[in-house]
Length: 94
Image (cartoon, rainbow, N blue to C red; front, side):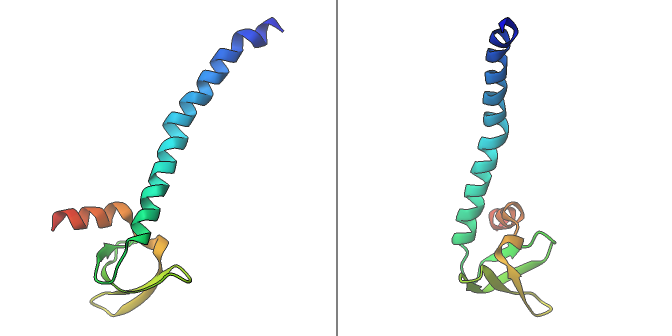
């Protein structure tokens, strides 16, 4: 029993470190992505995770899809396929 009492503070410290360095940043990123998806509007320039540059043509919140206008035509994609990081860089460069 002595061994467990001596190791308990280290185990607790390990959980605290994991929480602050892994779980909390992931929750923050998910919150930013959710806000980004909810604030999309027609006419926004975006970049998908596969690298397609386009403009939002239509948004369907019922099934979480949107139609994007590219130079080649219109494509219907899932909102989750839009890259937050790349689209944010695109918006900042303008």
